[in-house]
Image (cartoon, rainbow, N blue to C red; front, side):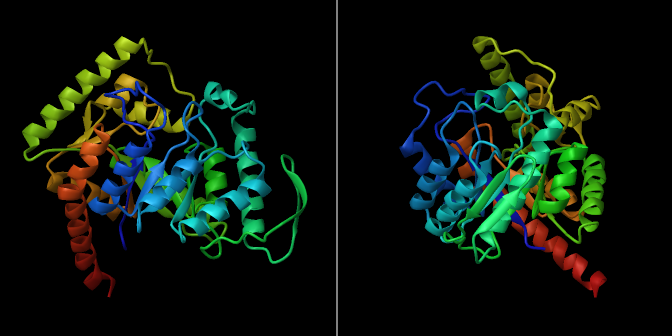
Length: 362
């Protein structure tokens, strides 16, 4: 398998360690992050969706203009923009980037966050809407004539397919969500199913579950997993960095008066359940920040030297996970560090695993 490595670009400096305090949009920082990802050897970079932050498709357009090869994984929430307009918007961005766009479909896992954008649907209804939304997008993207559509959430007549996607048959769909409703939608639409960084046994079980659901629709998605690697020249130095990260996260949350609340989404609940097994699982899967923040997002880390972390990722690779989303608690510094050490180690290690597997397959 060919491994894909994804990073993340935010519109301004900041993370759990260093909360943004300046302007929400820093074009110069976006350019630096985009070019740092391209130089480091990332295949793509995620542009997140934030109901209190800059609009992602415009950030993605800036990233595309600032780079030559870097792919873009745009987080996109169904229901905010009508499907016919979204189809044209995304196809236009795919054309501007010359086929570098992929879509990370985010149905939403927090009611208060969704309501900021005027979305008051409950959990299961959101996934029913997502199913319709993706069906509508793909119909328009692959049509030769105007499209009619009637569903529970969307209805339109003669939607124009004139703005074609650069990629055929359509822009790749990345999808996440661990609830039954989410997996049902993923089985029908996901080209890549995305998991957060859980222990190996939990990932193996979830991959098997998604595979079985997708097979019923004649589909075979790829699998992605997300971590916040903490790497250093020695393992001791890496764990010291982890301790420092946790101290800073706790201090920042205390300063801002942030409370750790029980998460609504199943993915976060799974991370917190895994954290009950200990602060460290599977030798170097560290749950410290997930515990401190309520696992509201991708917050588990692999801690060690670049080679040690690459070997840990290789265990997930052996389970069929061939896409790694890695982003650091020091966004720009870790992006550069990953390019110098971790990304080459990942590519070497997965290539060696492929070489070992080939004679057995033959």
